[in-house]
Image 1: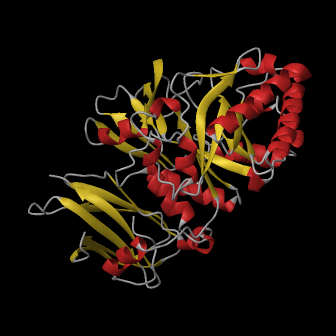
Image 2: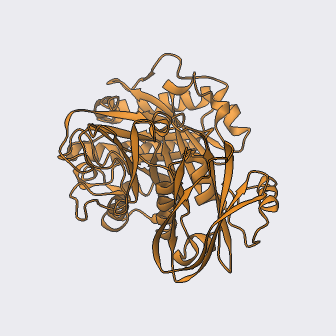
Image 3: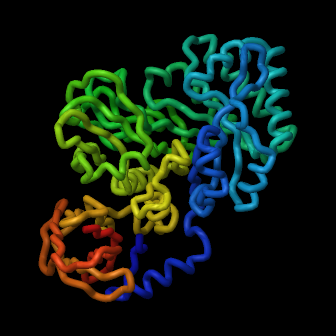
Length: 453
């Protein structure tokens, strides 16, 4: 996506400027979990290291004796050097959903904790990791909470003595259902950053077919919560410093058997990776936007199923929220799930909305138009969506990929609020990539779209 520039109607120069940006303007953390099961189809060299500052290799886990086990083929002695040569950090995640039961026994006594920690040091040295991420899902008693404190304290001390540059991070829940078993006051003394799991807010356990990761509760007051309520829980209720929190962004969604968002559902809830979802739009599924949740969802044309997921627009809203909350960074589950070669790439949206935009442009709502277009790609028309912070003059124009003016869609004064403009293409228009340019008297922003007959 073309970055926000003040030079009006200089699209070619804008594109040229973007290609020669030498480095990130913002040093905030972007943490990406790299699961072992994507290693074959998504080699680690495919990761965009200009976006991701930290990769967390998932998963290994402890057994009841404090030994570390993993799936066959998880570890590779070349991974760390590939990541580190690009200036990023490479951590190992211990635990994960369904593989964390061994934490109970392996943290229960000083002797077994010492053995467990010794095995962690050995594997860090053997494979060159820059640190360890603890993902115990979840402690369930007061004793386990206490043992977790002891384990983290002893692990942190050992890591510091071994190599003070080693990182210790932790994946954490965002509500009191599981959060009650974490002593965040104590853990904060040792953990370098916390990866907030701001997803799986609705699912098979819910009473309704809600969003996987709504920024705000939808419907308002929904007891299942949202990204914003989860972050506020960690910051305001549990006292984790904002700067230590990485807000999670899911690169996957959920498919329900139901006809409406937040409706009653039947049967299984199926997880779908983002690259499996984007191709469904206008191919038997219709695109919808939940203005309350700030999230998209799809409805199957026969009204039998819906899919809740995140897209570049919802990621943009989340990046803005994380910035307003002064969070330390973002976290992604999981690398390899993105449609990373598409113009609708979620990684690219993070890059556009978090890394390269200076904070003076991200914070004020008066400068953020949240320009988007859906469907995209499209075959007859697309709806251009943008926010108007205050009443002002707007021009909406179309350029081809070479920067040549194509047509004007709108010129005039627009009132404050969320706006939609329909662009219906002419019959003789050629297939290809076009640039929708939104201009005011002060600045210009653009969005790539693809027209396919």
